[in-house]
Image 1 (cartoon, protein in one colour):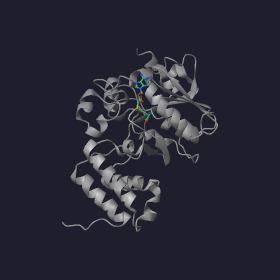
Image 2 (tube, rainbow, N blue to C red):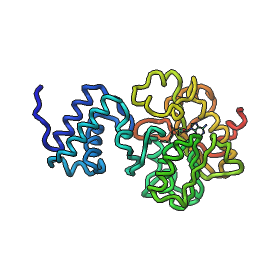
Image 3 (cartoon, helix red, strand yellow):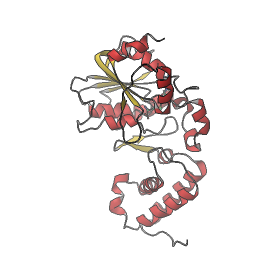
Image 4 (cartoon, rainbow, N blue to C red):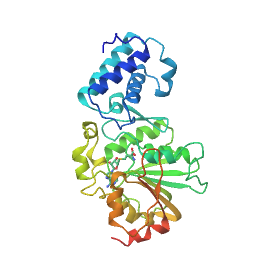
Length: 298
Ligand SMILES: C[S@@+](CC[C@H](N)C(=O)[O-])C[C@H]1O[C@@H](n2cnc3c(N)ncnc32)[C@H](O)[C@@H]1O
């Protein structure tokens, strides 16, 4: 098929889409398909939020914007870096976050349970203290602080590099009074602290899955993904330690990805409650009293 040179913003989106498709670029870092990725790339080049692109589709972009589209497209195809790294920003639950290769691109399904309109299935005015374990860019901690305006949030990561990025995001969102960043190996630095809600999207990619990941994922920090032969290296200690750090009515929300299978196989007699999200069912929900068994499992 022969195509003319792209003229309007719409033409550019379609052009980028064709090029990305032909290059077999992989998605999953903020978009799930080639059309969304192309639209995001063009909106990034136009320096507008992705949700403002539709209104501009009929416009003709200026020369500098066209040059930025070409540069971004070439870099995306050549380096296979997620678009978020090339743009230096990611969108999570409709909000902008600063990202670079020190953190994974935020995309946790936990975001779905943290809407800002108070409609969260977890909504509970009694939630005053929240822990985001393995915070990375701080996106979940910040979304939680917005979803629970009366709560304070501790955000923990073992990586000083990640905490530097999280700190920029906490400042960007003006939440320095309510989101505290803590360097800690899981619960090690949290002695005596208890929370009404623990949220965690830890590393959970098994060794076999790591070997099969597209190149895009290899540009993310391995520390944020790798979790041993069954993907449970972090999930199990999080489950075991949670009851010691939850208040009596406290709850744990833990994303486990494909390691859900290993987890269920390891505890065949234990019922699990998986929250239904738009794309997958791999976010577990536990009340504190359901976790004491794990604490005794060590
Ligand atoms: C999958 S990323 C999640 C980041 C962020 N919560 C998100 O959803 O975008 C996991 C994070 O866990 C951190 N991490 C890895 N091992 C850890 C440990 N033992 N204690 C605390 N954080 C750890 C990594 O540095 C990384 O930032």
